[in-house]
Length: 458
Image (cartoon, rainbow, N blue to C red; front, side, top):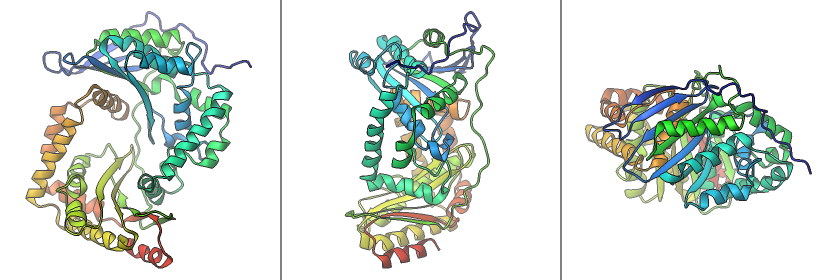
């Protein structure tokens, strides 16, 4: 059969146009230097140089996620992520994977509610190959009908795998409780019905609409040279005809002021599991909210480790759960704060009661000085330790450019965390934890237990 490509025919209008480059973070003796270039056509390239390693990670971030989907297209972003590995005009699916495998590299992708990322981690000498392969995938996907049909089964299996893991699925159920049938409230993977209904034309139109250079951020970190990366990326995109409008400018980061109103809701999913999986939570903060630093410290103290309040009260003192923790999810215009616990079904109400008491106590009184000091140290240390490889560095600079449009050094980040005051923590605890919570539960709950769960959020 004849294969149709979704690529747009090239118009060589950007060749010879100047590239705008600036140093965002100077680093020390060339180590940790972050530079940003904007190519004609609005494509951004950010790099972080780390000459002391022999690896490099190359990624392309796309400013599209599941929140950009209509109800009928739920799951299209993630479906498309799979399809971009299935072949281009230059490479088959096997050639894409074998090119990276042959040099001992690794390649993958992930889809979130507000962005998608494709990346490859290789030896520094093999970075040109990674740039060529990943750029080819992003700009030249064929999205053939046979690939749509074959990959549909793979995506459905991934949905089934998530449904087989209630500890994972309960977080989607909590998002539904908080956000309802909204783009942020729907699952990133989509549903069986929406995936079965998606057509090749729908996915291809979604690709053409959202995979525009002005929505893309190219990020690379490791033993690299910024100018060389920019030159190789520009060639790859120009050869593919992807930089069509020389005067285009990058799209600004998402913004907004949406308020989550899904408070006091309870979502229950009956499932024959050995444990009941519970998420209790409330609206959090957007990623643009200056209070997010104080919330990060608060989250660490409440449920961020073995010394946290929830871990000590629920697991260590009473032995009611193996896994219990708190977490935050931040979006451009809203956020979530949640507490997760997995426990015996007959212990659900006891666990929820303890969690509510701890949240209410911190909302009213804040943290002790000892808790605050320990949480700041833990939050700072985990932030730095999470950046100890080129993949993490690529993620940091790519996401920062896409979501905030700026870069913050590690030292500046540590200074901001260290500057969090007891008053800031008390204020954010009152504002966030003082709200009426919502609840999501998956497990073998009897009717009498289910009825009582609504009392937990009263």
